[in-house]
Image (tube, rainbow, N blue to C red; front, side, top):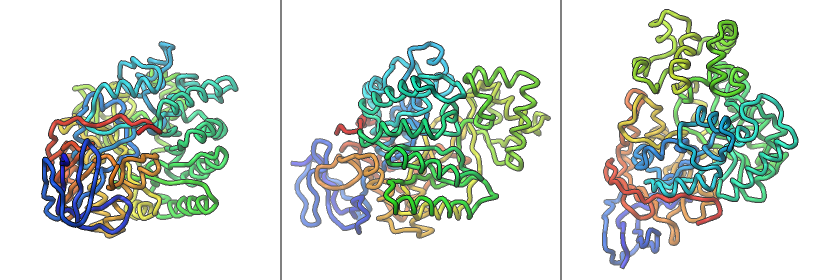
Length: 524
């Protein structure tokens, strides 16, 4: 007898093939049998009432490294149908960790306040395994974190010896189960590396079957040049390329530059370069507020940045550069989180609003808040247009990634709704309402395509032998209820979520189950 039978369901198998009515049987956490005729016996039988059954959604781009230990039930993930997520993106993973106390402090200050009781990537995954989260979790290893472990926040070219040390850390992390190397070329210390360094390190990925994932050096007016750099690294190293959260963030080049970047990707693919994209379905981005400081101001780390912001002469230079680069943009940047109680009033307000309240210029409003919060302050930045979002999403090699975090529904502040609603939004808005593609294609972008990119041989599809990560949803009712004003909400229309065969969400409520697994590349 099977453990679970889901019958009378419309099966979306994750391959983009047409759905079909049938049943799926589960035993010991795996899909054992499926069919379209009479169904077998099972200890538990669920009538799907002709709703859609899809593989659990795979979030290929997330940042739950530091939040999952605090919120292991991962409501923001589970309640939108995510059953597997990959962290360590944008070049900033929480491993490897240097033994040097100063470099360890720099990692804690910049990446996240954890105990860092581990040194290697494998030890970090062991720590996560002992945690026992609700969601399956795997990770990239961050180029920025590798560079920090070797060089700290030094804004210079790596020496031959330093490059060799970085390569050794990368190889160890890949052997420990990292799925890829990520880079964040707008964030220090990764931004201090040139294409030559990135190319040499990416050569290490090839023997492990891993790929290079990049938050490119520019996503605004210089996005075309940034794509060209990323493609040059892929060509020079032979590593597959994943362009993270591809977008265009400057009004001056909306509906123009994304046509060029997609043309460049298409050309590279015709030439044999394995390049794919991921994307979140919103017109606003989100990151830390200190990203508005010039990159040179970060040399030496967070403490050095804070010291420069308190030096009157250096502050004048920082303000001038920020105001020049943010002309017409300060009003598009909103505060989403602050750590201290005294500045909670700023959450939900734009930098211009805060500047007017405080009676200062916008650059001062921004950097004063960074000083007050010692960089523990986040932003939401409205910078994209719907036409570009849809053009990028239509591409057959574009998959979905939330760029979000695993948190609870009572998480403080006003985080980006992508943390809570990315995947249902693609189905509800871009498939059902905008009709960009069929439902089968939408599900493929969330399941089979990212599973293929990650090399997950036992997830991402509904077929015998696969792990029973499953989402049952009502296509007519599914809705991304999380909004910018009130993001901490479950999505509508998600009826059931199973992780490794265990019911983890029922009608928008987490069951408390924590049956997730820690995933290591090459190990099922």
